[in-house]
Image 1: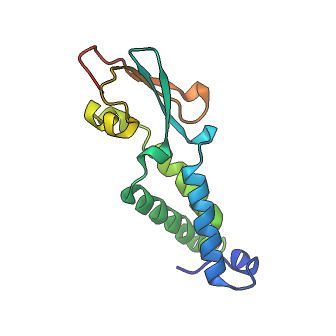
Image 2: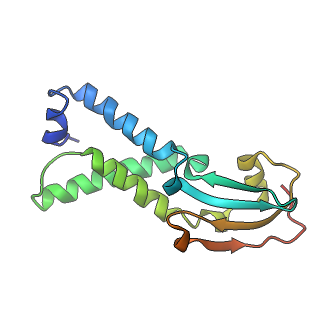
Length: 150
């Protein structure tokens, strides 16, 4: 896929430098422990709460989805004659949309999976709540019965 001309110009036509910058930008955006990357609040029976971020769920499939989505943005823009090539903004937008699409992940996971992610094996989880996006977007996922242990 070609790169957007304006992005390439910012790197004096050096495609390798642009790829490095795009990679760094994408990794920073995906793995930041930032407010916008918060995903789940886990409450344990002992009252302790833990925030899990989207980065805690990163996988090859998630990264592949981000790259594919960014490419689609570039192709759609080219078809609409709004510029050609992949832009850094395509990758950031793809990350946000991919994360948004995966907000329902906790509904499909089981306690053993949470144990692996949180590292709190043996702790009872009593409540899960999404916290992605703004606090007004927060929603309760599940209040777990006392039989669920992590």
